[in-house]
Image 1 (cartoon, rainbow, N blue to C red):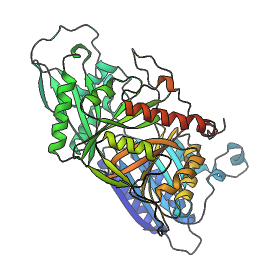
Image 2 (tube, rainbow, N blue to C red):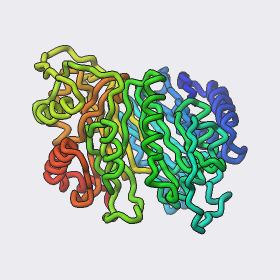
Image 3 (cartoon, one colour):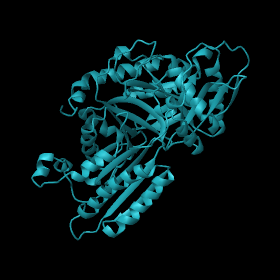
Image 4 (tube, helix red, strand yellow):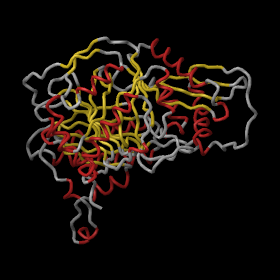
Length: 490
């Protein structure tokens, strides 16, 4: 669910905006106490923005965006007014005793909300983002795990599309198979599964025994901005592994995805082991990118690992085959990108750079997962202010101690050839190819990894995957000191 409101810097508009957001939050099912905390926080930020963002007497626009992803509600307040030094408005008890209450409002926001960040976007203005986690009942609170060994099932299994009524059984299955270590926390909340299915955010299959017990689950998560899907949620009951259930489910998902008209499927295969990568390779997925330290550390039982953030290999399966493409391949990565395209069955022509007049402003989206310490810039098109925008916003993300910062650069725009070296000087390194990842376009992923990653505990399976790993870690080794020096003081 999303809500976007554009208003002028007029305090008379404040109450109507708060009322609209109040209704939005109520429709989400939030309790009154939580809604009030969000509204008080938004009131504090929005009223200050209306009063102070623009010089006195100057009229200007303010945009309020509200988004819900079934786990969080994120509210962004944007303006395009005069600069603001957020660091000067930090609350101090000592200063308050002397009558200086600056930052007291922001202190309330920090206490009421789960995350609060200010982002200076330079000539693109500035924005405040506040996040409230949605309350759901965790499966551990309604399910006592049965640790006794069940009898071996020898009958036939049944496979069927996932329905909302399967949600609780899926959460219980995740809990049986992984305890509390599964990397996608939302699967421990049956209501989140139901809402995602209801909103057509995902589709999938379940496998059940003749007695109706759910022993397998596999789903495709639809991309938020492209006609592809992620084979991102898969589990088989430990007592039913080794019986071909995963293979049957994967075949069914590929067929369903083709029927629904998806252009491709991708998987984020963890590199703690190569099992997922091997399964993907069996179905002709090809490795295209290695994303270092993308997820927080979790313990994987039975595997040799080091306590470090989890890296993932992007494996991609084209469902609609393209034989020949023209792309702008930066000279630093032209060879390996060509190798990746060859694996995908594509003859790629590297178009020469051509100078063209850039628009003044870059179209740049910023996605943040505060809990996972993850942020991603997505470039819609390049503008003259691209590097300034990135530099301005990086400081806010680093101050928030975001560990993984990615940038997806479109390979169908010539300027991509000009930005690689400046980004490398900032500490970004090669990530790989992200085929059809946004608006059905191909992107080059650059990444900044602000934590040390040991390559000896990043396991890859395919030959192309090993080439990508060598390239990524070669650059990471050079950039590591620069990357780790960007950690906040203390």
